[in-house]
Length: 312
Image 1 (tube, rainbow, N blue to C red):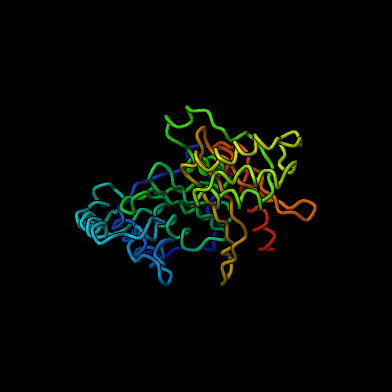
Image 2 (cartoon, rainbow, N blue to C red):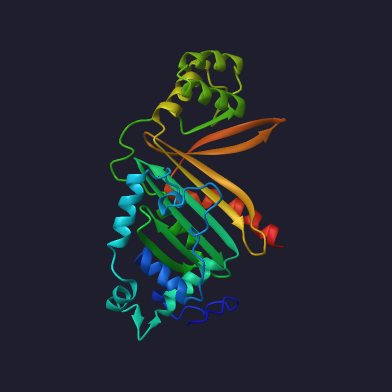
């Protein structure tokens, strides 16, 4: 059985090709076999919390599986190729020895210093990605169906590009104009109450809520947004919402996992909006601002900096 030294930093890249991310597609049986060969390294989705859906689809962030869905998943899993034979055919297993890069990537997933878990739900699909960083290296694992996974590993300075891939939308999204402005700063109480009103099919209350917070919604220039426009943007934020992104950052360098922060995005007609909480003059507020996939690393940067502070 292979032994992985997780305490030794990876050697410096010998050339440009060595710095490029390496990506492989693995089935769940292949991934589990590699993890076994990596000293029994745990995979990030293998722990099932009490009361959680015991199927892998549930662990990947999907809705609890029905009996039929669970049976279909089990049948699809059973139909996958035997992992040792399929890995050998692809040149990833030679004489019972798993590819060194694969072992290192799975080892990094098991023993990182920083964990970033990203969940994206859009268009009826739900994807999960786990990014694990230690020293100068990052490994990532991602899946949509819990049967096929993309495993990647790369130098830490490539992390910005890899994070942006998580939030990339289909080409046909964003062709419609949104009623949600590119920047608006709202009291949290207004945004929360508006969401409750819409979920309760009481959109008629939006004008009342806007009147209660007159002058407290601000545009990108700091000007007060008229109540009528506030009603429109609140309605658009609820009606257009067709997806979300949630990224959780944790310090996992010690024996206890410390959740440091969460970044939340919502998908509307023309693309992503970040929901950025802040506090001003003793009032909880939320900035709703247009963002692009490439901005995910920027939004995570302050939280990652806080992780560095926790580790010190």
